[in-house]
Length: 77
Image (tube, rainbow, N blue to C red; front, side, top):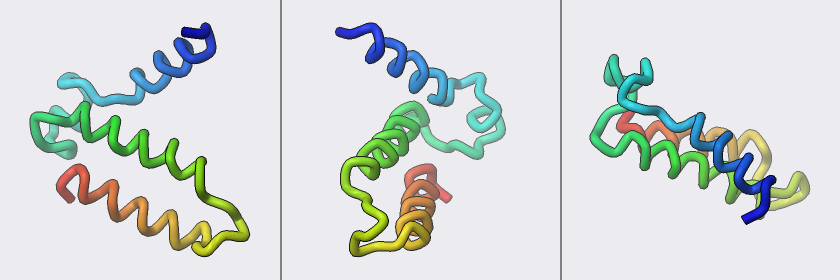
């Protein structure tokens, strides 16, 4: 595995909430699978970069609204 990929993995891992994370402690991030929920949302963003185009079928505002709604559903809000 390349050095760059390892660096990216470390950076992504730092974004994932842990039990000591404030969002987990005060139950804003609910459920026993908070880490999996965080990876799901990271994947959503990475996947978006593969298909979204400014001149595509959906506007940036439409995608942002839809993705925000999905992210809130993932965390149970």
